[in-house]
Length: 140
Image (cartoon, rainbow, N blue to C red):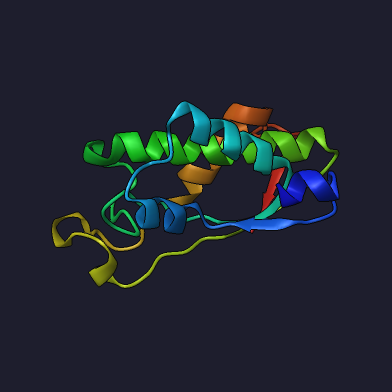
């Protein structure tokens, strides 16, 4: 309601989606929640890029098949933000690549720092044609 009352571009937000997911204990993927996330996406200018699930604040292996539902949910949310910012004329969206201590994930998933470059490359290239020159950049 506050974003609607203030109007576009008046309140800029940081998204830390992993905290929203763990707090609500679900992926925020109902039709109502997806609509809400789409509505706030144009106001998000910074992303805390950590992938989590409904039961843990971070995933130890972002490529692991057992977290594919969470991974796709997060990718979709981030891609929506990037495409909205590009539509607004921005060339960059800043991101903090978060990865906490091993205790924050299940011990059998901990593989050290996850491969973050492919994660960001996948999102920026799929959404906006990044990879080859002239694409939308992610500033880290």
